[in-house]
Image 1 (cartoon, rainbow, N blue to C red):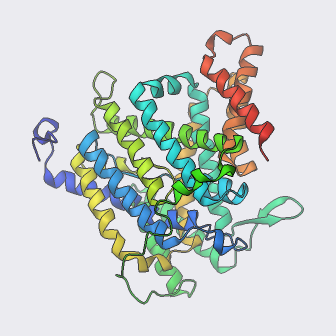
Image 2 (cartoon, helix red, strand yellow):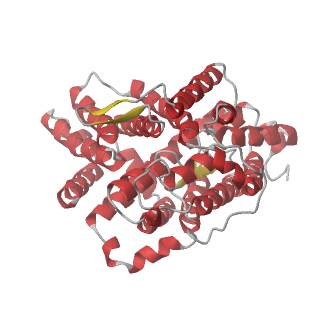
Image 3 (cartoon, rainbow, N blue to C red):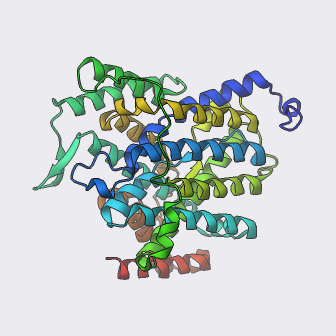
Length: 442
């Protein structure tokens, strides 16, 4: 095992890898709670139960997809990088595709599966790198920031800090009520721990919020901690049922598939570069075994869709494990083992309510919006598409719409500015695709 993962070459040992893997798990364990609540639209009270995903099944799918993805990354990619259903993509899946567009969750899973297969094929052919390189870096940053704003808005809304207002569309909620107060407490304690550099701050913040919620009667005390593993039957293989329905084959669904594919592109690539660089694994500015890492991500995404969850991708929280000493894929195996053990703690899910998960959404949003500082705002032809990409996501409640608006305006502003030589031909393809997306969007 030590020889396979090159412990001696990378200056690591079992102790450092185990601690690193455990730290990564603590930093991203919130996904076990947030993902089932997000995909089941638990915060939406007027949504028919018959159209919701089963929370127990999604919990199992989340844990298994995270474990399988991390194992594949550890054994094949050999990077200290853990995978799980991505934040932002799960919100897009639930709030934009299912709730906003009225598309069955089975169809949404089918779209995730197709995007995963495309991701795999593009990686094998080398087209993936060409597509990523064709998209301007400023738009890449804008997409990340926009998703951060969208996630933050979802968190504030689910905690009832931001509510509907007939006069102004949105307004401030009753901050003296229980749910907003509990969420505010969670935000404050999480921010304090994050500022102090405490590893796993998001996870610990959720635990403290749950305890305070139970003390003040906002959260019911669970009757048991360990229980039977819920059935995955309600979601397992449901993605395949979409392919037999003619309503699945629409232009709108094509836009959804492209969005899943596009966001996973940059989420994975950005995280891989960031974590590998932090761990000192880059060689001459390049990533060794980059192809294996990308293939691992695409396989994990497809497997996750079959199990019953949104796109599985690399987690930036893996950087917490690297900071604790992880340098090899063995740390990812440790994280995977902990995800498998978590299957037996489903009863605890009942104590995790919307006000508890809201701080996690908001904090992740803060981290993602940091990319705003890297955009060249001084160039108007860049600022316009970047700003529209970013601002349209929370305002239209759609990540896809934000991406579409930015990709449409980019060629326009660049052509008018006389910078046509800087526009990659692939960007014209995206222009046509997203124009059609708006024309045929219902």
